[in-house]
Image (tube, rainbow over all chains, first blue to last red; front, side, top):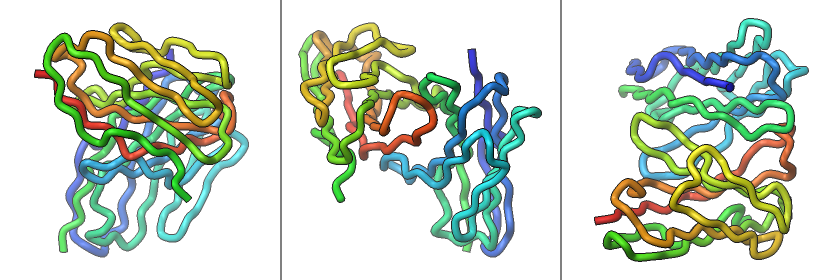
Length: 111
Length: 114
């Protein structure tokens, strides 16, 4: 059974810092991995979707990398802003399987 | 560009009452999902529908039923609500069942059972 963990559980940084969020999964036979953002009291917004054949995806200040063999993905946020404050979740999809979600990392970017 | 629409946004039920959570998507997606989100538990799959006319149990199906009314709509029913069903419920959709496709989520229904 696929298990997904995210470290750290919470992170507080000053504005302008570059930061890395980590996602680990136990079964490396994945099809893809998706990063989401969730604002308090809101739904999930898709940030990046990485297929298993890809090593990274970029969108603006966000870069997500995938290392299947080690069971890890990282989400890199450049030049963080207070508006980046949210919970970030990763979800791992296996072949013909539904996504399995991690518990999330709660990010606070301080002005 | 509505995406995935859930109704209602908030609901308070008494123990034993029943209700149906509605979900509709306008992206012509084949697959739809119901999740619940609880503090410290993350998102857990309740039921999913890989395609119109099919439904399957997820990780935590007990106490729930679903109906895939048509390609657009997927409803979740609580027949006899219990306090343990207090949670935030999310509906999601994707082009296909395979994890080749990403998920699009609705904004959620916050349910309290007293």
